[in-house]
Amino acid sequence: NMVLKRREGYGGSGTFVIKDLREEDKMKILREVLSYPEEFMAQELLNFDTVLSAINDNFYETYADLRFFIDVASNTILSRVAPLGSRVTNNSSGGLVKPVWVV
Image 1 (tube, rainbow, N blue to C red):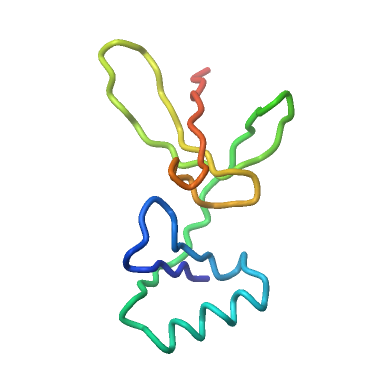
Image 2: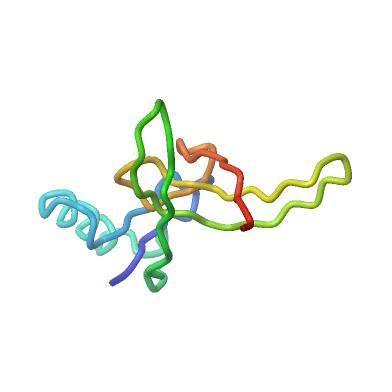
């Protein structure tokens, strides 16, 4: 279970979760890696947790990346949440920010 990342990628672009790819897309990216290995990095896939998210009055499970931000003007904890069907939580790649409730 590997993640391949293009060297010039940023904000989640150029990131490929091998196990989530369709077979034809998997073969395409692996051929590209074999042709230009210096253009890619590989890392182990971390199976991080999902959270319940509400968007447009619908609930669904999304992958989340809890990050702590310090803001002296508010008392808020935020998490980055991947779009439905994705593991990429970067905002520039369609990820969302949602508040974390501490109960």
